[in-house]
Length: 293
Length: 198
Image 1: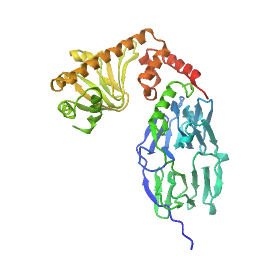
Image 2 (image 1 turned 180 degrees about the vertical axis):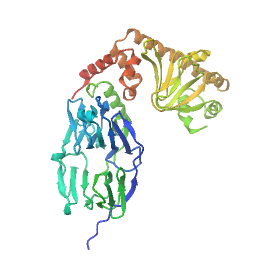
Image 3 (image 1 turned 180 degrees about the horizontal axis):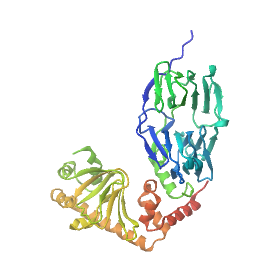
Image 4 (image 1 turned 135 degrees about the horizontal axis):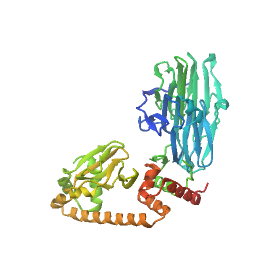
């Protein structure tokens, strides 16, 4: 007898919490950890800049030099463009559809600003920044970047012209994303046409959530969610059906939880408070390097 | 006693042998106040009749010179005291006080310590220890400002206030240290060149 795989049921459909500014360039809704107490490890933080219009000006808006240690920042652009620079001498621009996967690990300084042309023209701006935790044994590994350009992104075309699943990390129906991760996780952009359906199968223990970037969707043939909402799933069952009620974009997060102690202070995410003190001290003493404001 | 005063009681009990009952005797004279980010608490020329003990957040005292430049006298993060001593003599303040972050602080009237000592004698010891510490701190700070290099001032600052480098802009640290922001930037760059091992 074949066991029928169980549906992964929706645990809650969450509205975007009140926004706050990060620097003067990012107006973000923090879904977790402060906005909602939900289990999403290995994803530690989700800042969602819902779509807003920035007026044209000469001086770029953004966030000045700041450090990170112990995790990865993943920036996903939907509208607008962000330029970044870091203390290792890397720089680049994240355009709509692109993803920047920065492994801060042992420590990096960086700054993020609206890209020059976007600043001068102004316009719609919509982004996601995720903090992905690192297992203890990788927290002090060497920092690195993975740039995932939209044009190079691994894609799976859905049946019946349903749309496309872009695989940033992990996999979808055998299509693997190019970003390497330190623990098992899937990060996908589902770009669905109206009526398009996508089916997901994530292990029960994987913490799973959807950010509705655009449009409105029906989940498991029952609940509906619309733009700027977050769908959190239970740790039961594995199958999810996603149907677009109009042309929609959904960011899909699902990962194996990292079951290790967490100590966080500001931009540092470690396992113990001693490691946090060390991070602060190392930062103060210039061990993260230097980056001009 | 409300739960919000617990950290203050724990702080006192680390310093002197004050019992829970004794703390309850004096705690009704304490008030808890919250301040928004950037909220002005004291203007120059006003008389401040109370002191602050910061539970959460960050306060600062500062002056503004005739050219409009700000000079930060003191930062007060968690577990720090902040007061303006002209107020003890009912005289107008030379300084401003504001909240750099959303802040929760205990406020106490200028007579609090003397009154508390009438009920709880060990509060007298605490008061004189704190005054001595405060004078010692000021002496060191004067010496730093007169004689130390920018790097020495910065290294002293990160010992004293380890996490403020993550909480306040560079120009405020420079203002506290009595150096230019460019000079602070140079110090941090030199330290990075000495210590950064990619």
